[in-house]
Image 1 (cartoon, one colour):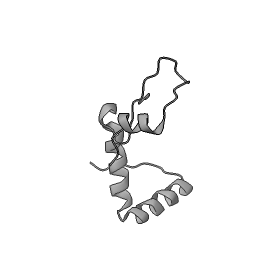
Image 2 (tube, one colour):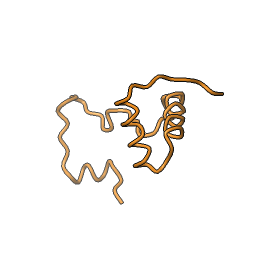
Image 3 (cartoon, one colour):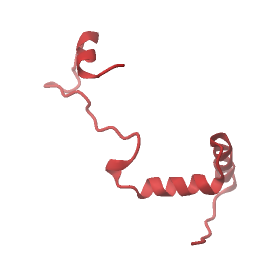
Image 4 (tube, one colour):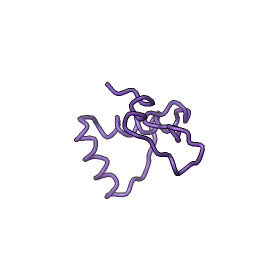
Length: 75
């Protein structure tokens, strides 16, 4: 489907520059952004549900490096 969207010039320049940096077209970048927006929230990339480590006293979690290594697997 073909549609028309008015994009302010400064925004379009940023969009075009980002597309060039990523090695894709403006159309591909816009389509990818729309598809990401339409995905269910739980499937979006880069989303992390916080807190990663639960605390009995939120805001006062104190862990040693050894305890962190036990909780989070490092390569």
